[in-house]
Every structure is written in C-alpha cells, then in structure tokens.
Length: 373
Image (cartoon, rainbow, N blue to C red; front, side, top):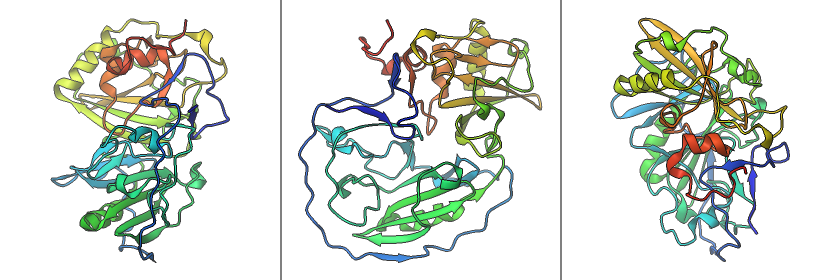
C-alpha cells in the first residue's frame, strides 16, 4: 500500500490527525514499467561562463520575454514561456498510470516546494546513468526545466557538484550562488537559453518584488509583525507583494522560497477582502495537532500605499494560529483573502484540512476523508 511522507521532514513530525497533503493521490501498487538501456556518452566540464554576483539589492526589471524568479537570496532570469509546474519526483510511476501527459511536456520552472509529499512506493529506476533529472525518472518524462535547492550549509541536502554534465542528448547545469543551488536540465534545442538562465543567477538581499531574502517571520511560533498597523485604516493600496518563507530557516539566514506581486484591481480586491475578514483568526481545529509546533511555511504580505509599506503575516497550514496578522489584530482566512495568494511557484503543499479547504476550495473533493471529525 502506498503511503505519504513529507520528504523534507520525514521523521520530524506530521503524522497528525486532520492534516492533508496537496495534489497527491494515494494508489495501491504501481505499473510494472521497465526501461531498456540506451547509449550515450557522458561529458563533463565547468559549464558556460557565468556572471559574477550582482548588486545586493533589488535588480532591474526583466527584459521583454523574460521574468525573474527568487529563491533564498538568489534571483535569476527565466524565459516567460517557462511557466511554473511540478516536476516528477521519486513517485513518478504512480502519477503516470493512465495519464499520457502526467508531467510538463515543454520547458518549465519546478514549482514543488521543500515540503512536498511523495508516496512511499517502489517506482522502477530509469535504468540509465547518469540520471541527470534525479529520482529515477525515465527520459521519456523529461522536459527542460529549472529547479532550486538550498545548499547543504543552508539546510539543504543537495550535494551535486557545480558544473556541466551531458549524456544521451541532455545537459545538466549546476551553479551555487549564495544559499541556493540552481539546476537547469536541458535538451540540445534549449541549451542556449539554459546557459543564459544559469548565468543570470545573482545574490541579492531584496528581490525585484520587494521581498527580503530574510524575514522575522522565520522565527516561527506564529511570530507577529514587528511594525504593527491597522489594515482597517488602509483605504487604498498601490501593490501587494506576496513573499513566501520557509519557517524552518533560522532567523538571519535566507528563507525566501518564492515571490510575486499583485497590482491594480487584484491588489484592491485583496485589500478589501482582508479588511472585511472577521477578527479573531481561523479557521482552527486546535485538538487535531501538537500544541508546541507550527506550520512549515508562512507568507509576508507587503502592502505598498502612498510611498509607505506595511507588512502583514499570513499563517495557513497548522491546526491553530491561522489568519492574517497586521500586528494589531488577527483576521480569519477566507476564500477571498487566501485563494488569491497561490500562483506560480507559491504553493501550499499541505497542512491542516480546515484552512486548506478555505484556501483551495476548488481542489477539495465533496467528501474529504481527512477532515477532522
């Protein structure tokens, strides 16, 4: 029988009632897939020449046809057509059963977070070395893509050396910048773009959306914003940056996972929804998990208005402490305040079922067997 594990925190916690993992299906057994050997010559090298780290601050606007992506204290440029999508993992064989296009078939940026869940099933290996993709995924499911990981010094487990390795018509480029390792897997048709992507990575303290590499929210324990304000008194907003943080990265170390910015009508609607949300926080089901723990990730909302910026903290993946905190009051999560936050690489990989159902109403089945009773 297949079982879910939180691959980044397995053994630490999470075997708790009322917890759900997003976008993961349980299956019994798996298809008996086998891959025959294929020829290919392995080549190695330093890879393309790379630029030196840039200024330690927000970078300039991306050029037309490109956009910036952030991770930890690194920003890099990717083609706008390389949209975020989840890459296949070690449980790939469960996902492909009966689905000919289970994984992206065009270039993309991996949107799996560090706390993604995988099934404990024995998928057959790809049967070829080196496995430039990772996880034993057969080459028929590969597509060019960018992936991020924390360095071992920053709490990550990736020990793949920097440089360039090629085999079977594929090339993997790896580069360490700041607290991040950047991986680009490419076929020959996209090798030029891949080299440009990897060369664009630079270390920053603040990304182009205004999100800092480090935030006080990383203190965990449902930390409150250090500069309280009253969102009810904020009549208008110019833009809202959504900054996604790893709550297990120590304070003072880079913890940013991804970012995006809302402007115009989207920012105005989100502000109105936050102001209208009931004071008191929630939804919570405090009897369904440990009292001395908290979620894996949190969001900092940077509300820019009239030259000033206010920060509110959003908690959504534990059985208590959920809500939007401006430092003055904790407001409840509603579909209108929470659902707009998730897009691109900002993903909720799991958590307590009560807030998850509010934040992702379209992905919750009519009958939810994990819902607390």
